[in-house]
Amino acid sequence: MLIYDGIYSWEGWGGRLNLGSGKCRLKIFDLDRNDGAGRQRRVAHMRPIIVVVSDIPREPAWTPNQMSVKSCASHIATKVVGEFGIDPERMVWIEHYEATPPGEGVLYPCEERFDEATFTWRDEGALQKGWKPLSPPLTELVRKLLADAAHATEDEREV
Image (cartoon, rainbow, N blue to C red; front, side, top):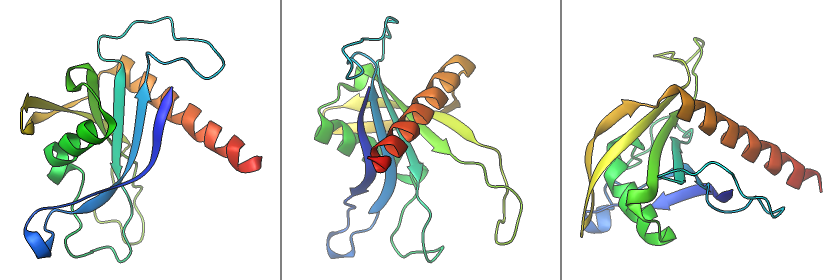
């Protein structure tokens, strides 16, 4: 079940300069919750909380102090876990990069990609361990969750 879908802003560090601040698209799914119609998923997941973050397009393309999801992954994960009361041991943190086809203004075209960020958790928060490509079965699950969330959002707009 989708429990959050929106633009998430995080505070940076560095006092008045607010270095490292930014915004991203954030979607949080809890596979243990029912779907709103009283149905609960039948597949048990060891890590049922799926967090999907992605960069949002910026206008202008370069904005001072705006950080990418990848460059602040541990900082954002620490903030999200604290604000949403998520148990980090039951969470999968996924960075979603949309396809960028070749065209005007695109320096580096690429295909859609999902990366799992891994962390070591301490009292003070997350420490980045690394990234790895998302497994094919989990990639398909995430694609379905994102498609269902987009479809639900479209249905809400029509009402």
